[in-house]
Image (cartoon, rainbow, N blue to C red; front, side, top):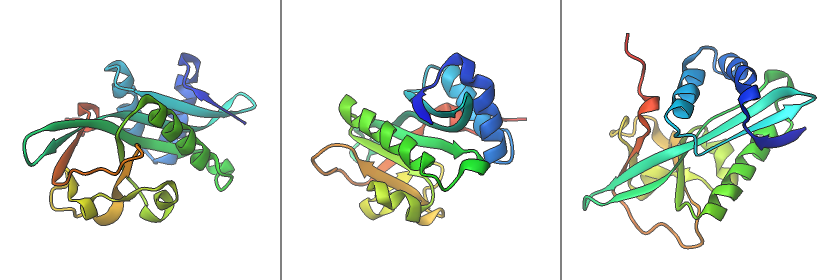
Length: 174
């Protein structure tokens, strides 16, 4: 298995992977919209014998502090692995590769919506514990699923932040 940056030839494989992994087309629609808007900061694929078996996307997010200052970071998601190769560390490898690259770029933080038990191993913590919230969930009804990771050596010293994802994440209107 090889982990590498997304290439145009991977488009169909990624679409099929996302549609199967998320039981619908919404995630692949988001990924296509991020690519079209040139908002795919980093997209990696895991390829096994020419088949795309994993994918991860990182895109820009903006944080608005209580003082009105904007801070910039990265959102992780989606991440998907083909059902027949799950539990082999592919998602973890994609996440580690991506976070390492983002640290090298000097990105200050990464946020995501996901399973806290899984993402804790990478250093993510519930964002609401630091008073960071997702604008689509101001009441934190997703609980600890909205998570935060500092990508720098110094801790994040700002609280009361509302995070906005790229417009591609907005539900498609009918």
